[in-house]
Length: 573
Image (tube, rainbow, N blue to C red; front, top):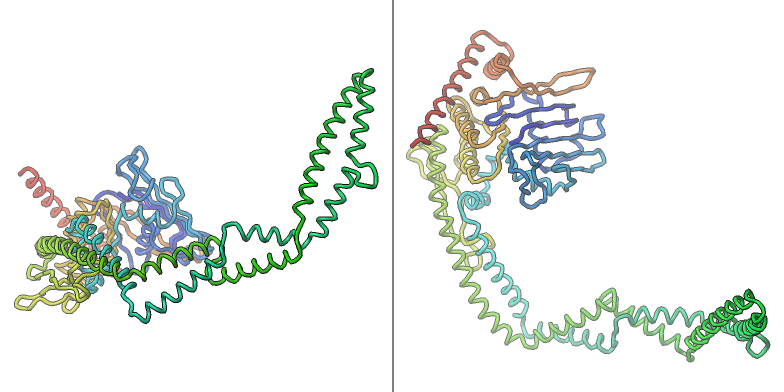
């Protein structure tokens, strides 16, 4: 669960530390006080989009830290190497800098924003006040159904079969060209292959040619340098060189070495110098041989490099790329030349792949219909508990209006229908549901989906939009029911929901030293009564309002005790 949230310089929140409890945590406050900033901070530290506009005016950076406890110790979270410590605690941190940089950490390790998001998805879910609008988008309905009760093995098997089918179709479509197009393509390929084959390309050739060109361009200077070195070493025809002088010095020292150990040692060193000079002279001689060239060689090298340059502009930036292109053209020409045989082969494979995709699609469709029947019953029970006993909810199936009646998602068009009143026909949700009904249907759906989620914390940001009176009490009871299994954090304006919380926080805006700031206070029983009275009747607080707030708290306490007894009886049974 989320135990501690620390916020620094997020919007009007200069600094805040909130310690949450298990069960049902509620946050209330005046409109604009900063309740949603708390939710935004939770989103930011779990990888949601965050911009530098979130940084408090005058601050260089904003920072959020979240401490999660009660996790499975030392077990790495999926898609990451991050694991809670030996106590089952995990700390997530995110810094948002004014220059746009984001520094994220998980368990003390630096992670990317996407990695932080993957970790956050496994720890909590955030449900905003606009989530109900997703129910109006029928493209989301299939996703909800699959997430609720369709084994991923069905989806994976179908996806694999469909991808194989799509790949065969793409290959077959590429081969099924008219004769004129086929002839033009074969002419193009034949020309490209011929041009590249005539060039007789060789890997490493261009580098060799460039080196040879540079040598030829400076051949005269290089020849003069080598000839000069050769004359200095050997003496040439004009006199003594280094070799003969070293040999003379060695001979003199050798003679003297008969009478002196020092000269004997020096004679040995002179011999080593002579050997080195002889080796150097041989290398100079070899270099002189490499400088030999014939008239017109530079023109030939330049011409060859120019050819390679022209081919590179057409077929690839390097010789290796051009050779790869040549091989690709050969394969494509062979494919087209023998396309009739390949088309016949592909058509057979396509028939088998289509049959397999249909089998997997039908299996997936059957799994969806079983899940739909269960979802309808579960949603009906949830809506009954949310004071909507007469609402009918149904999952309608239709066929895909596309090739072979299937696409990447399967063979089913799915949409949710409802009837809000007795005697009315089932119709698409977006055509008949009110704002309050959408909120409760979405809450019912979220509650049902939460039972299969592994997350331990659920955040609800004003999901009670459009709800009031008796329905508000039912929503409060439902949120409390969720909090028995998972930690719930709920931002609300409704006293019925706020009174049901196990812990109550007030978010208040104020001014200090000419700056606006927001503070978060954990309320005592008396302060809680005052806050509920404010939610009920506004700023003008009366004894009657305080008494009504006390009654709300007493009623919520009695409901929790009754629910605990009933849950205990069910457990005993």
